[in-house]
Amino acid sequence: MAAALAIRMVVVFFTYRSLPDADKFYESFGWEMGWIARALASGHGFSSPYYPWSGPTAIMSPLYPWLLSLVFRLFGVYSLTSAFVILSINSLFSTLTCIPVYFSAKYSLGPRAAKIAAWVWALYPFAIYFSAGRVWEYALTGLLFTTCFCIAQRIHQSAKPLAWIGFGALYGLTAHSNASVMSTLPFLLGFALWQAHKAGKRWVLNGALTMLTFFLVLTPWTIRNYRALGVICPVRDNFWLEFYSGNYGDASLNPVSPHPASNPAEMNKFLSMGEKAYLNDKHALAIDSIEDHPLFIAQKTLRRFIYYWTGFWSLSRDELQREPYDPGNIFYCSVITLLMLRGARRLWSRNRAAALPYLVLIGVFPLAYYITYPLMDYRQPIEPAIVVLAVAGALALKRAKAGQPGRVEGNSILQSK
Image (cartoon, rainbow, N blue to C red; front, side):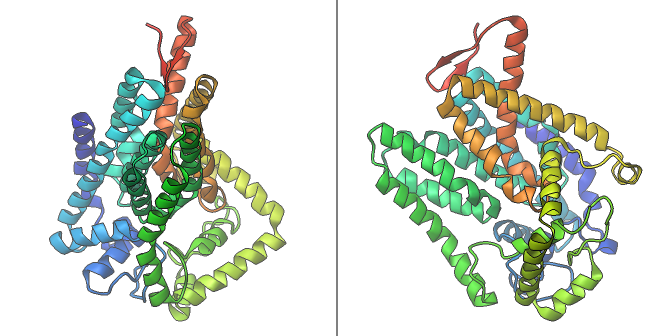
């Protein structure tokens, strides 16, 4: 953890000065997160998800904008000090993620692999860059979600209702950081309840307590969204905007996006119509696009799937001019994915109960991004699990070259001495 924090803080020193860029409306200072935090710190409430002042919003999850607004209140809106502080906080969150990474890997792979996984996370380029160089919720969500996952692996061993209540509350808090994590709860909780049932422990009551607590944590924000915007949504209301924007043409051929954050005409439309009416219009357009161009959307979804796990979208001349580091990124992402798949296969062959929670994360969590935007940024909540599986794959490869078979003991794959 000391090494992880030191490395991230070095990166912070080289990146924080570039964040307050007034010429670009401070977009790199959190984009929508930063603009909402500015509104909160300026007394406008949770509003204005883009640079122009506008009304209340539910476009972003609330937790990180509130955190950033606190930094703005204490150290100045878009100030250099705020830039240094928020990137330092992100770096601390990413550093603390070493703890659930270690215990998650220890539960499924054993103590030796857990130590390696924690060190890999400390030195992992994605973990360093997306915490020390970007103002977004990646590091906060990664810490919360990996902790939820670590608990989900072993909560079936507990018969205490308070433990299940705490699990539901933490999952609800994590959903306020990134709503996409909600898709994994039914599967992780269902598997934990099935294991508790097999062990002869109370599972119906504990499952009900978990879900009840989870929804109770979401309820205040749901009520706020209905009162402020007249919409019923537990966290965010902009799914169809992202779907329509993500399925509008080929990103490598159509640099103009129908998204208000990058299209002045759409921004004017957003401001004139208001958030609710504008998002309803995008909902209708998205449904029409599904009905009129199902094959195009299916093909683009497949391309996004490939990009999510390999970094490959296009190697055209125009694409390489915009993204000159793509070839290196493609190689890096592909190697990590291959090691992850080998680790998942190895773990599945040795201990399916330990492998299933990981398969839920890599199988369920990305679904929303396959049909909207598959950016490397957006897989950060499951990056710790990817690291653990990649370590398992690398250790399995090492043993295979040495001719040493692994063996299973309890929940762990232990390496032969």
